[in-house]
Length: 127
Image 1: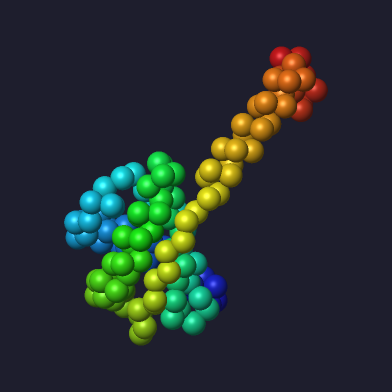
Image 2: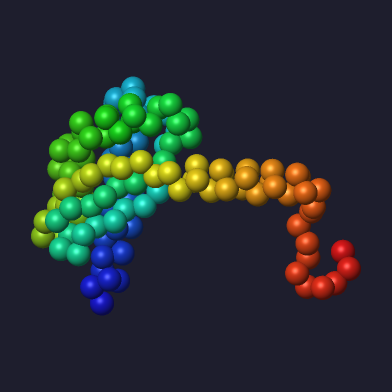
């Protein structure tokens, strides 16, 4: 039951943080295309890791610095919207899963092109 509550609160944090960042923060470093991909709160809900993905990889460091600098303000604003006893401390981390997935797809495509193969149909039916 606690896991279900933890995942619900993670989704609320993600939704509310995205809204707060886009509407209330006026930092020019936050003007790029980014998204909060996932939120991992601790079991006691005292802290949360916020994973951020950015479209332009060179802007990731500036984005993380801006978010870490605004963490106190974001935590306070988040405390107004959440109805839990303690507002979690926010830690912003880069999410590299999308870039890693794109890299794996590129490697698979290169191998397939090198061998001159196309993906086969697993149903054993003619294409």
